[in-house]
Image 1 (cartoon, helix red, strand yellow):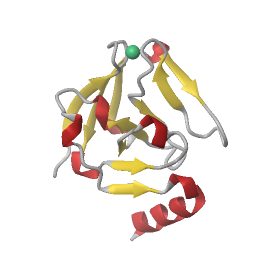
Image 2 (spheres, helix red, strand yellow):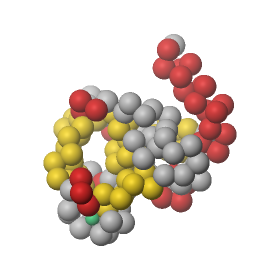
Image 3 (cartoon, rainbow, N blue to C red):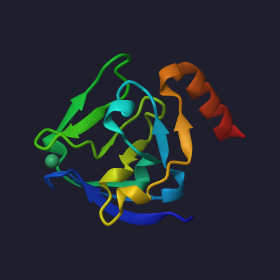
Length: 130
Ligand SMILES: [Zn+2]
């Protein structure tokens, strides 16, 4: 599947973004926060992501190493995108927040074992090289 342009945002509409992403590359993570939030990750380079509005409405939650910037709308609590620890040079968009996409149609094809973060990250970096 090719990359397509999407717009999306939080629930109340204050945070809006545009992204170029490939819906066949959705990943799911079982770490302490992704497991609870149910995020479906679309990892994109910063040039494929534009925050259209709402930067000042985002609250950043940090824990553990503090590298990941878990951002969410401070009004409606929805997590439309964030900067992940496993790829701090990229943006992880939550595929559940894309306009016109039925969440039931989203099928993760990659899995990140965030409960065993160091091992999962090493395997991910190896796979990227190969
Ligand atoms: Zn909101």
